[in-house]
Image (spheres, helix red, strand yellow):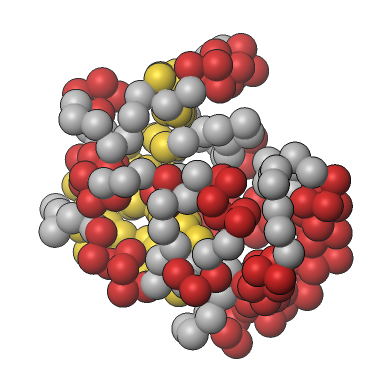
Length: 222
């Protein structure tokens, strides 16, 4: 989804009111969101894949990128504890111990800083695409809240992208063997160009009950 510019911009826009000047991105993957935060004064990205970290460091030599596992002990000691924003988009669902990972992310924040989580929604939508992507789970608003540490307060929690959820459900009717297949790539391109603008208009009407993903903003207690 790193090539889905409209979709990624929509995600960033949902978080824009809570993003600060010192940003930690957890799980940069193939793309990362650095380019969407040009005004960030300090940006650190982590990923478990050393090759992805090297690529990001080459692309953004003034920033800091670290090979690290968000679910392992010692993350705050490695990257610091003074960030005002911790951004985690489509990563938590990959981590078996998501509670430890969420606690690690929160520990990297200064008091009053924001934890921005974006995860796939509804276990019933789990299909081949989730399995191929390495998803351990899909979430509800309730299960996201259960994964959060008691060091944060939830400010907002909602669903995201209703039409995308219907499309994801429709993929239950198909068999997929690779995320790199022409069928999957064509779906992503069509979705980003034609579906995102429509789903974005409908989203305010459905975000309390239904969507492809869960958007959560939590604030670290002072």
